[in-house]
Image (cartoon, rainbow, N blue to C red; front, top):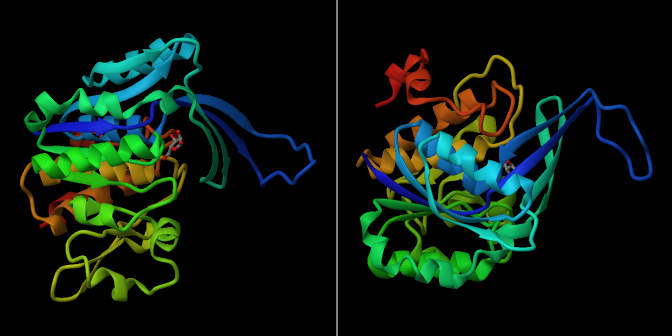
Length: 299
Ligand code: RIB
């Protein structure tokens, strides 16, 4: 079984469903409120575990009531949390999410996620090579993310960098990662207004632009390739779709499948995830994915 290391955020999502976005200074009635387990790092770890990976989470939770339940939740998926630290006098990460017609907007408060430091990554050095692949995002400090990417490139352990949420980016990081998975907004924050082809041609099989219902775009060294998304009957909740994609991609790539197949597999997982409520509850299991009518068409 492929061993996947996920370095990233572990948070509680506070999700409000409403008919329309609220304007500044206005109060409106919402339809529903739920607390869900979330955090981009944790969601990606859960996706990788549900889809058949052996996962270790490296992250931080607070010393508040939520901290232990965030860990218990990850462990319930079989994820090794021995390197998740509990930070004294600090609240756990939280995200306030509004869900309108299945689409989300998020305010993220890092809390203890901010306490994941470069030393926590350096402490991994002796065990680094036991991993088949690493996954990292941008909800932990920039220096921590950079340290992980640096170590992965030194030790030649493949790494997928999901640059979400969009933030400051230096192009030398690109040379060190094996795959980077920006969405449209994140692509613009990294490359400005350059068109996709002009950028992707210089990074064959490395930059995978996730375009929602338009699928995923990358350059295979010969041509631009668009891997289509799968049809979705009803979009219930898009929260965590990108995380599902990244977790699924990590599993398939670490099993040695080719990039095109891995993207198809990850697209299918993401399309199933948005048909259910909740960042993690929506993530399909491997059995659910295999039961999809579209599974047999994956190369
Ligand atoms: O990608 C979705 C996640 O990002 C949510 O679960 C929330 O925690 C946010 O930060």
